[in-house]
Amino acid sequence: MRRFSWFNVTSLTLGFAFLYLPMVLLVIYSFNESRLVTVWAGFSTKWYGELLRNKEFLDAAWVTLRVGFFSSCMATVLGTMAAYVLVRAGRFPGRTLFSGMIYAPLVMPEVITGLSLLLLFIGIGLDRGVFTVVLAHTTFAMCYVSVVVSSRLASFDQSLEEAALDLGASPLEAFILVTLPIIAPAVISGWLLAFTLSLDDLVIASFTTGPGATTLPIKVFSAVRLGVSPEINALSTIMIGIVTVGVITASLISKRAAVQRARDEQAALRTS
Image 1: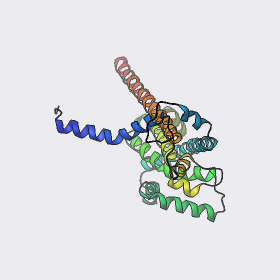
Image 2: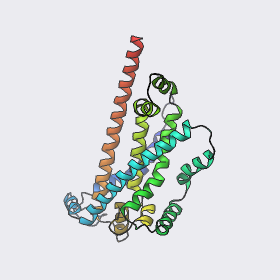
Image 3: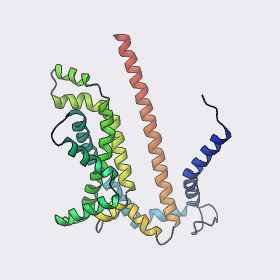
Image 4: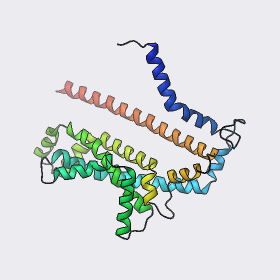
């Protein structure tokens, strides 16, 4: 193994500091007594209480969670179906066009995507609100789900499905009972990725939102334009905490599943 040099250690330290030091400062100043976010006046948790009494932020957070949940569920279903078609259907007329339409939102500027969806909703006479934001987030999030799931399907052993079919299962039963449990980690990862993208989106939501459908990123962006308040620091700290707990939990679950899968494989080899 290559030994660490002072250059490597310094580069690594500076890189992590550049990425995470602003977050650490944000967390620290969320417990600041003063309203001025750059002047430390003592430890206090009052801004978390102020945040919980801020109805506008709470309503925006509730809208964001609803949009993220429904859009990620729809994106996971559609993205998994699209990935299955791309990997298993082989060559068919229009495959190039289909794959291009699936991957286009990955490289398309968000401004173009948001503007095109806005014109579409206006053209069909659909009132903008929570439903239109869900549709917009589903449109671009399903592309990421498709990429994640298709990479897992590409390495999937199809002989397992063929064995299920030989034993009398229908293609749908083989997919539900054999394929889906095996690719479940990729499907769950796609759902989490779609949910994260929905929580983080600002540009597309600003084009497709309407009255009563203000998401949390839009609300925070509007508030920051008037100056950063300690309540925003408290909100960001809570979000960082939730993401950290989620990442640690997902890592532990994945590690436990990998260990259990290795034990099952060893047990199967011993019995055979």
